[in-house]
Amino acid sequence: MKIKPLLIAFLTTSLFSIAAEEVAVEVVLTPESAPKQTVLVTGANRGLGLELSKQFAADGYHVIGTARSPEKATELQEVADEVLALDVTSDESIKGLSAALKGQTVDILVHNAGYFGPTQGLGSGREKSASLKTLTRGEVLDCFAVNAAGPIFVTQGLLPNLNASKQAKVIIISSRSGIMNQSRSAGAYGYRMSKTAANRAMSIMSVDKALGNAIVVSVAPGHNQTDMGGNRAKLTPEVSMKHVKGLIEGLTKEQDGRFWYYNGEELPW
Image 1 (cartoon, rainbow, N blue to C red):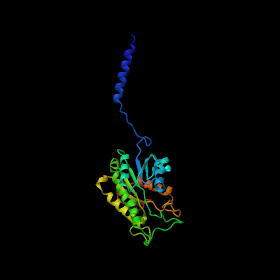
Image 2: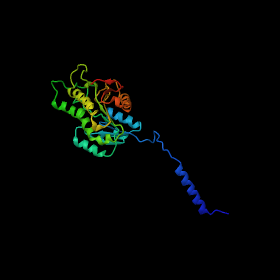
Image 3: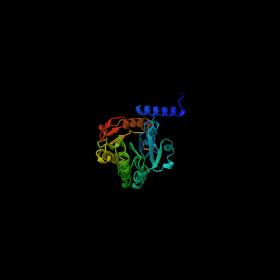
Image 4: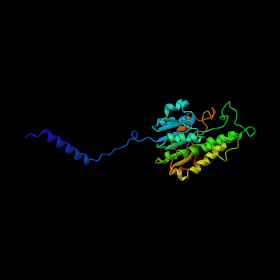
């Protein structure tokens, strides 16, 4: 006796359905298929911020770089997934960044945007930073607005994004020149004082319940060959940012609220 085609189709479909119900399918995320973490770097259009963005992007992170003039940040546009406008001294600009990132998780926030002062650094062929005789109130306040207040209010604006992360990390790029008992040397009042204040801001944020279980640290990148550091610096951004990236990736709660050198050494502040 021949079984009609319709009956064969019915039996085949039924057996497949029963087998499918009894087989547990396990989906395993490989490193290639796992969701990328998102890192946001302020002042990423040049120098250390640009190099750090490049290294995170090369390793598969979703990179958001900010610049005051995104349309001019052509090199950053080539490496970052998103390039957004941000002036860390402007409440309106911070609100704009927050709106642009609404609903998006930020796992790593790197406060890299910095300001040295009108002379832009102490490199070869450059005028030394203003002394007490020539120092202006505007120079000092500008340094504090960018280096100390900037990280506080950018973090505030991105609280929903950071709190959406399972383990957010907030990093303030600081400087050894902000260490209170640093060897005596004159000049760069605004820069040095503002970096001391930035470290204190880091310490306070590290215990602020608004950030949940986030890890907050300061990192001194060393003296680098950048527009700010000048060409007499011993370090290159490629080398120092490789160390900084590794330090950030390996941060644990035990390191929270502390000040670190790019090579992993803890610093006083």
